[in-house]
Length: 382
Image (tube, helix red, strand yellow):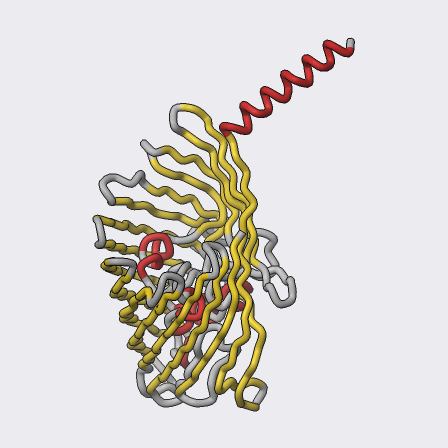
């Protein structure tokens, strides 16, 4: 009996080892915490300088689980469950979601590409954002264009989404996403996007399009959650518009560890009440020039300049179209591949009657047309 039990235990162990060799589940994460100074923040009728402890100034703090299982013939089942949280107080992010950053399951194949269902990112984020200052390893959240109007800093994620990405063929890849409204209205709070990228040696190109239909007045069961998007600072535009459209393109050239890139995006909000528009048209044209340069083996400098040209129709109180200019600077010193310290400085100036500066993550809008932010922080990955 004892011999039989021993043989059974050994057989189970061997089978388990064989299965483990073909499958994997990985716990991963990133913690980004720092201290920020903003020269002018207006809140509750008062204004002045603001000192604050921050979480996710560059990268949102998160932990996640990713897994894959080999199904044979080069096909794998894959999944990601990714949580966002505030490193300063431990609270959940993305409007108190357990896995608010990503939650999807799918299939992937080198021959046929990738397909997944769940909460995911759109094609503008997938194909254009990696070339912008909103890239994961660059300024990301703090370098967002005004109000993240083009979603390059992924303030919005999309629930009920079906996504496809083609295999990479000679540096070319394309894909798309459709997010269901989960409503009998079908087009109430739905979204779709498409994009492509191409890389050949030092040259990289990306383009993408995103459209969100009738997000205003819908519930969190659709593609976009009202509460979450409002908390991210973009709800005033997304939820006040009947239709939101974003078209973006980017080009980057890399040489000897340095890079230079240009990004253009056009965002328009039809049926919007933002900036005093009476259900008219609000749009943004964003022009971004960014670059990174290694000052030493462990020290990298990043710079970006963004010019945003805004247009508001049918306005009651804002008589001049707004224009933003923003300068972003960043120094990153890497202690190791996993841990680094960063120093960021951001300056924003806006022109146009009644408009005030508002840098993303600054803690609030300025009481004037200018705002300055300085942040020192630490990031570690696991």
